Length: 186
Image 1 (cartoon, one colour):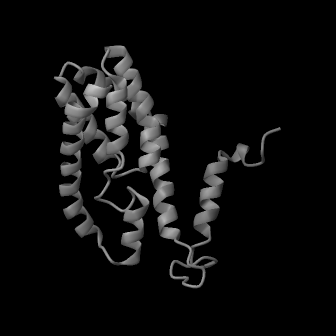
Image 2: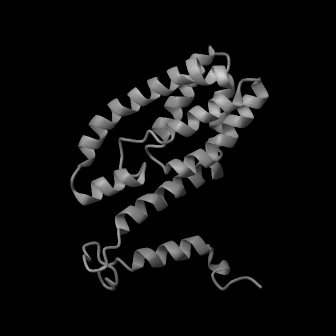
């Protein structure tokens, strides 16, 4: 037996999202963004929900497979440039989605590409995992960013300005460490 909403073309996720958003609408106003009594960080919850939604869309739309096909083409690059490319891809993609969601999608992609092309999968997956934590530019990227922004201590413009510099420093450091240190142990 189909649920009653199946005939209406609505999914369970669509209904839950609609009801959640309905709680903030003015006629009902059950939940309030400025409700200081409850101290519930609704904005942060929505940021992370959006991040996981974007990550699910990556795999659902085939974008993750498309990224894999580009990575396979890039395997003709020298190993250090390939490491740099993977580090930049992961670092800047994790700025717009949750780092946990992104790495859970990208590690299998990177592993598959590495196995198909015969490159060191452990090295590339380690670089990708570390770079997923280098999200310093936007509030959606990591919980500390979201907390800092929601507290009002830091604005998004400052986060972007300093975050870009920190991202590039992190990328360069991890690629150099991977090339000259990790490579010798793995």
